[in-house]
Length: 437
Image 1: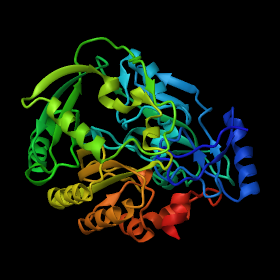
Image 2: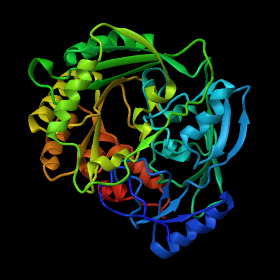
Image 3: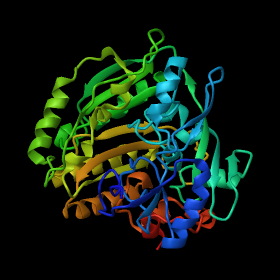
Image 4: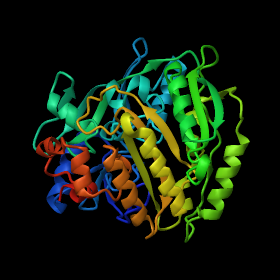
């Protein structure tokens, strides 16, 4: 029997029993069998969702990772058709030497193609290219009571929109066709500069975002007073010349899960202070490979283990432009006052490109993402943060969430009822059961 599967945050502690398929032709029978035996199931990719959106309410998942074949490629137009279990890194490995790159990528290349669609992931260039769903041309969708459907902007349109960002609830994505973007080099020309507070972040963002393909900032979430929101601003563009090499960084790994979290107030303060000070006061240009630029944590395999056996929760929100600076200031003050925080705190501006997805997370505004070791003291903090986000008209990211209330979810995603109408009744996650109950 295979080892149980978990979400990346390991919270909630709901081990999943997996049934896998070797071929796409096996998926319909396996889907029907699990549903018949257990009432419901859910497609599970590579387990990179942080909360409970990837966990089946029955704790019985259909593991899609072994469906990892490329079906067709067109290197003249930059189009790839692949099975849903292919990872983004595997796409890059064959696309980069041909002069193509993912038009949108999240912070890990270990997410699967199906998972990228189901969570409508976004990246450092949302202000220019929108979400992953903006670059999906077609996909195959299997529902328990139908033949395989092809969905696109012109075929099965309602299911196309509901499936992009639909958290795997409308059916099982078996394959997808995506449009890539051309590049001349796999190197990234980046510029880094540290800033002293949140106001400086917004000034830098207003000046630099529209000049560069990629823009993001690390912030010290424990800084207080005049330094609240200090951090490091990073912009980048694909180099105009250079090689088309696939990065093969040697990877370290966390070999085991410690009994308690290695992230604590002492280590966080020390890390954040050192990380901020090591970066330049003046704008500094450097050329780096795409791998450390996009996927800094992927160089440490099983890094989620550092949070110990209780796991961790990520808190990611987006605040509309009109109240973004004020609300972000309130969020960071609340986090610093709590004494809890994250060594990886990411702040970025999102653009106004509309996703084709019905429940897509990003909106024009500012997004903040932080990781917190799981402990009882989190809930009072999250309650305070949720109130700030709600009052500012913002929302949380379902792919990262493990605590959002049903009331808050339904308020933030008013089209949830349409997704529920289109949901395959044999598919149910712990997340969906929690927020629509």
